[in-house]
Structures are given as structure tokens and as C-alpha cells.
Image (cartoon, rainbow, N blue to C red; front, side, top):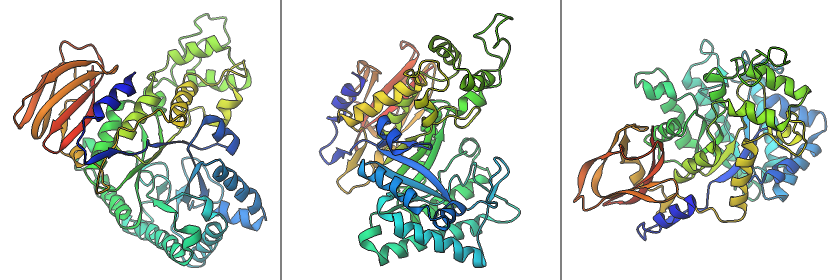
Length: 464
């Protein structure tokens, strides 16, 4: 109902724009071809360190790796791989830094990257330069400065481009992504943050050497995700991708994982007064019943419907692809799609990790059936609709009123999440600011359709 209403709204746009195909829905990590197919994934993302690439070829196991890539390709599943150069071949979570190879080390890195490209490049759709340049994948700031890091990424990108020119039949299709930009909250909150010039350098590198700018959006809410997307969108006109997204970090950042569970309140129960994290860890060994699992998740800060709702945010902002990254993968305990489909936490094998599984499956089913209409508007020149970057809505979320600023406002309509018109503001005669009261609306998600002299766009607003 909601998406059908949105489709009707977008039929009102000018004829010089059209909707792109919906954002490719993918998964990050832990997927075999069989699992990806069962999930209805349109893309998969996984990584290679230089040590792993070398091991594949030295061990003679390249056939197994390439056969896996072939299997994804035969299923029509796009493949995104990211590259890493850890300091140590045995990674220690939280302490392992990236290195910039030099001398014979650099020669060997390119030697084996060459082997990977020539053996499997025809099956790879996107190759990503590094993992998270502002996040988990770190460079020791005492060893390298940002210019040195960017120069290394540039050498990698130029190496790939040279191979494409040399072997266009096999590699011309291959696109290059920046590392997944994350950790933007502090940057947005403080324009004087020392991370701002680093972010700008990463974006400049992406514009010069990559086909798209990649984000990692592990946000606690739709509004924070929108703020990060809009911040990046004002700094680049390059296409955007998101190779990791979920609401997973809210379980850590809210303290819920470490808090004592509120489900088992009888002191005689084995789970009494232990943390939610410990309950989930225990459930991998002694699975919970579905009702107990439902009760545990109901006590969590996860927002019902976050998966389809945040996918809509990514799609309407013209993201090329979006790889969902699980639930507990970025806190404790670890979670991935293999664990989900094996139902290790729940006693009934046919009861996967709810509600995250069903939300994802319902969305992927809608996409596979072709019933999902993209909300992204592309003009005839092929660029993103520029009116997205000149419209501001604040505060958002809001409990009482919002202000909309834009060039030459003509009409503003507000719809609830079911597509029903709840507020109309017509004949605005080109004003640049409109204040709308939200006092009569219930706390919820709303869609604001804004018409100005440039066209029509839709933004999401949250009433607190």
C-alpha cells in the first residue's frame, strides 16, 4: 500500500526525469552461492586480504575460489569484493593495522592481485579499495599520513585501470569503489573535526579514480542515516553505494547487549540476571524456543520495519547497491547469514532469526517479483536529480513543527506512511521558506512531497 502510494506520487514528476531500476539488494559476509540464492540476494560482498589471495594461488586452491565466483555469476548475483593489506597475516581483532606495501612487498601484492584479476575478474562486478578508511580498518597514524594512504589507494586503482585497458573483453565491466566511509556522526556534529579533511580527501580520491563513493551506514535510526547520506551528497555528485548497512550498532551503543535481560525474572532460571549478550551466546549451544527468542528481541532497541524502511531511504537517494550486514555482526555475539539459516539460536530449525529474516525476505521477494518501483529520479543527462541537494528540512525528527527551505517553492504535500494525504500547502508563489505544524499528527514516519521550479522530490520526516 505504502509503496503503491509513493509510485502514484512520483508519476507527478516532470517528463524530463525517470525512475531508475531499484537499488540492488545484497548481503555482506558469510554467504555461499546456495545461501545467497535462498535469500534472494541480488549482490554479495566479501573481502580478500593480500595474504588470502597469495594463499589461494600458492596452495593450488584457486579452482575452488573461482568456482564459487562462477556459481554466483551463474545465478545472476553481482559480486563486490574489497581489498585489504593487514600488517600481520594473522589478524587480531581491534589491534591489527593496515600497511602500505613497499619494495618487494609491493611487487608481490600486485603480482597476486594481477593473478586474481586475470583468473576471476570476469566474475567480479565491483572491486573496493580497502574496507573502512574511517572505521574498523585502520592505519597507524604514527606510521602513515592521509596523503601516503591516498597515494597507495591511487596506485591500486591505477593498476586495475591499466589491466582493464589491457584486457577490455575480460575486465572493462569491472567498477571501482572507495572504501566504505563510516564514522560520520562526529564529523557532522563538528565542522571543525580533524576527520573532515580526511573525508574530503577520500571523496576526492573517489571522484578521480573510482566509479562510486561507498558508505557504511550502521545507524540507530532513519533520521541519522538520512543525515549522513545528505552530508555526503552535498560533497559529491558521484554515484553512491552502501556495502554495509543495518541497525546493529544500536544494540551495542544503547547498552542493551551488556544489560541484564528482562525476560527471565525468576531467580531459579538459568538465564536469570545475565546479560542479553550472554543469553544469545548461550543460545548458540542450547537454542531458545521461538517464543523465548521473540521475547528477547522484543526487549531490544531494534526498530520493527527498519530493513525495508531504510532500504527505501537508500533507494530514493539513488544508491546503486545496498548490502545488508546482519544484526549482531558489529557487536556481540557475531551474526551472519550462515548462522541465521542454520537457526542455531532457536530450537525449531525452520524458525530463522526473526524478525530480521522475514523483513529481509519480504523485501527481497518484492524486488525479485518486479513489484518494487524505485523512488530515485534521474534526469535525461543521467545524473542524480539535483533538487535533492538544495532542499532542507529542519528540525528532523521534530515534535512540533518543521521548516522547509528551497528555491522557489510551489507546493508541499504531506502523506502518512499509508499514502494518505494529511496536509496540503498550495499556491506558495515561489517562497523560499515554509513552516508546517505537526501538532495534529501522531508520532510516525511521514513523506513530504515538495514541488519547486526544478521539479518534484519526496523527503521523509519523522514526528517524535
